[in-house]
Image (tube, rainbow, N blue to C red; front, side, top):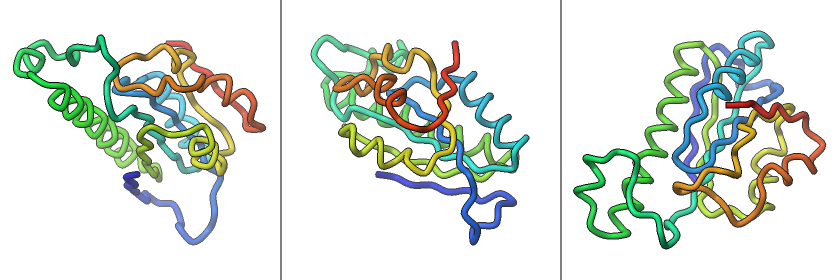
Length: 163
């Protein structure tokens, strides 16, 4: 697990309500990020961005979305490294967006998480922001359980965003 934190103007000594954003695989749901950032700004709250990733691609997945890079890849290891780089860039992007907006954000990367690990990671959240299509993503995405069903079973308000 990788954790990055930008504090912004938040007082780190006091526990704040936290909005949780969920990302699955290499997809970066802009509308979800926008809504979560707006919520954090309006309410003076911090965010936790949780990135879910399968560490190895399933058979049948050949290349990342960048065609030029795809031509350079020869092995599954190359493909997995490319996916890792995309997820790392997404983490940097959310940290940068939060810094610009002066919002405190913590980022976490969970590789091949079990349901219990995801529940533990989002337990502190007072609201969850997620794409309604979170279970439809394919590239480097967690598919071992239905994320949306799991989220709906929790006692945390869920903002399912249409993309």
